[in-house]
Image (cartoon, rainbow, N blue to C red; front, side, top):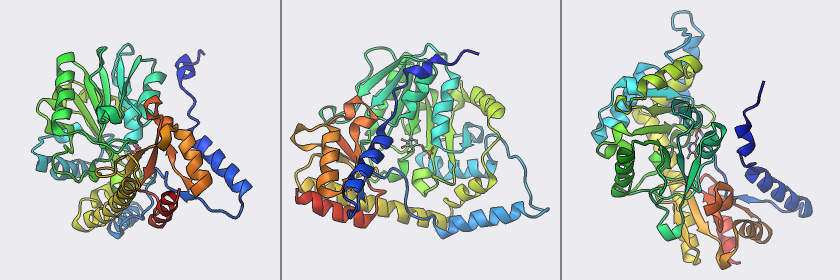
Length: 386
Ligand code: PLP
């Protein structure tokens, strides 16, 4: 047996361990203090009652002979795939066939697994900073990677790669910067992909946070995108499903990849839990939708509060309007960790150092709207006193 030596090329991701170590060291030295957590990357509000009831109903069906179910189709129940098309795509005039929508256990695994469809020598373009799954799965597969810096100076809009990219991961609304692409900016990427015969893997995990009317919710709103784009969505951040686990991936037939992805899923994935799929379906009912909308509005309210208060204090802060994240430039040209330590030591506030998401994240920190509202309010008061 020879190991996959590509794993040696992965950078050790110390980010969350290092944050934990520094927080613990502070608490050991100051046992009477409590930390205000503004770096939370996971949802914190409970599931709406309508979704819990749908899950309970699904569980009791599994406990009765007449309604028991075993494996479902690897690509998911047709009732859920049709519901997704009717609610998420038809209103945008996007015409999809049910065979192009694949239910999965969330975006994280599909984003990595999709890389099995492509030849090893393909060059991958990845935003810097970004969610680590794109770079790590590409490096594990041994592919060359081009990083596309995103910073305030280019408005967090990545420049088209100088070197031809075959696979492009785009994530908008973006984690960690909280920024979005306007329609014409996304259209540039679709044009690039068509000209270069590239494929865009569009991570729309935060689509539900879009509030501005001119921001595309789906890459398929752009003409010609169906030939060059796969879209990955998740119920994790839209409906609070980080523990329930459910998401979906759209692979249009025009990409020439739909049959391959179906084959891959049938071989390696035995389908998403019935209970999770019923829960996902309940997010589209009037009661379920109202419940998740209330949670989204709460998070967006927290994001607005953080962003506005940071602006009032004179900080350079981005995002938070169409995303649950606020990307804040460290003052005095400090680096990410210096600002992190300053907030920890002077305000007992925990944030996420931007450099942990990539080199271009240096000099920024990420605040999260998933943090408790009272923690944010108190944290912002303390930051103001700095
Ligand atoms: N994509 C982005 C940009 C994320 O931030 C996350 C989770 O934080 C995911 C994908 C993965 O989400 P999940 O696997 O829970 O669907």
